[in-house]
Image (cartoon, rainbow, N blue to C red; front, top):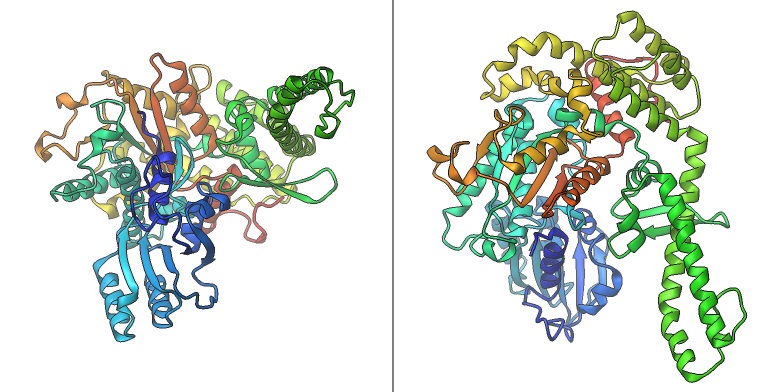
Amino acid sequence: MALNLRQRQTDCIIRMLNLNQAVGSTAGTANEEVYKILIYDRFCQDILSPLIHVKDLRKHGITLYFLLDKDRNPVHDVPAVYFLQPTPSNVQRVISDASRALYDSFHLNFSSSIPRPLLEDLATGTINSDSIQRISKVHDQYLEFVTLEDNLFSLANKNCYVQLNDPSAGDKEIEEIIEKIVGGLFCVLATLAVVPIIRCPRGGPAEMVASLLDQRLRDHLLAKNNLFTEGGNFTSSFQRPILCIFDRNFELSVAIQHDFRYKPLVHDVLGLRLNRLNVKGEKGGMKSYELDNSDPFWTSNGALEFPEVAVEIETQLSKYKKDVEEVNRRTGGDEAEFEGTDLIGNTKHLMNAVNSLPELTERKQVIDKHTNIATALLGEIKERSLDSFAKKESDMMIRGGIDRSELLGVLKGKGTKMDKLRFAIMYLISTESIPSSEIEVVETALRDSEVDTSAFQYVKKIKALNISLASANSASRSNIVDWAEKLYGQSISAVTAGMKNLLSNDHQLALTRTVDALMEGKPNPEIDSYLVFDPRAPKSNSGPSGSHMKGPFKEAIVFMVGGGNYVEYGSLQELVHRQQPPKHVIYGTTEILPGGEFVEQLALLGQKMGLGNSHNTTGPGR
């Protein structure tokens, strides 16, 4: 069985809802007769949201559910399941709830391991309020990550890129962020029950995360009853997976570019969040949709270009109409639409028609949903010329530049301020050497459109710094301060390498190409300098020469520090589906970011460095 993160996390949550008792495969639920209340904080609400629906909660005996910070009335003779981050404020709120005897018993589940000082605070607080007997159990669940698809997760760490690249950030702040990322990754590995072999490029946040995660796993594996003792049960073979860790600066362009495929478009343009989407319906009101693995159209067509998706919607609508006509013909109905009340005919045909009614209704709902989404997308595409942005950016990356008149035409044409800013940054990244007069022309065009140029100035600055720091790149990176001072040097391969590194092999991303090489495990100049960490091996043996490093690997977990997106996720899934036998890749990141939000983080860094339009405080808006 391949690693399925969504399924594993869902199983852990269901077990938690059943008071941490095993759910039998035959019985379905362990405590279906026990009615419970679920209390969660906002972060844990985001963990639950893509995995568990309201009907699922009821199935597992949850009759009421509340946010922790809401005022709640006592409910007697009922156990409460708490699912919270282990923070001082959350612990204080639990003590307050217990002292007020809000519920009969408290089953406390923390999203990650609760630190000992907080556990002691909880014990002291409940003893002092004479309510410790109400605390039934305290569990560390190791679920501090958000799974959006079978192979897609996010740690939901906001503004991670800014925090890691802030020139004013001190050692302590950087260490805290790295610690938080490692904590989230540890939860993912604990949920999958695997100890991977870790690979990463030298230097920067990727190495820091890999090194600390390696140490955390080593420390944990020293315990006899650790979380990974049964790891072999969940892997598709005895071979361990490989965990590839990258820093966002490895390939900056992917986080900024416009993409014309369905999933990236829906995320970037319509604001898909936690698999939910709000779009305007036909009659003007807002409609809310869920887009996850229960939607066959989304699963099958998410990687297609938008025009192909529009054709597929038409095809499915025609097929639906034909099937409805066939049912009506067989039952003697002559309605154009399928109406259960008009069914007549012999019993056999009638039964077949009745049986097909739920399936046809469901298909129609899916078609209507994606017709509405595609209509909303089409409106934005026409208004902002998004197809033109996507095509010209792709051409720029392949050709390594763009004609001046074409460039200015885009910057003075349709599109939001953010669209134009993203395009200008893509021009900066894709073109290896740009005369300063050309850059001046671009900046003037942006200012004429009232665009805040902070993000553009920031990328320009790191590009210049990269060239001057290239010679210093081999300096020692062991010291955090040393790394922080040379912060901008980490993105040299992405910002200055132009077409060769960023897009080649039929538009294959540098990330995908590198992951492919790491999974292959053969000598390759692109990855020979990558570091190797094996938490199960003695420290002295953890090196590229170890026999455990011999590929090919069948399973990989790819993690992007500083923000990821659906473009990279789609590219990695295409890679594994192309290969025979198929491999398996899980993609994760500190947060899933649309291009506009990532550019806002670049703008914030630009402002911190005193760059950009000081008079424009509105930021790169529409």
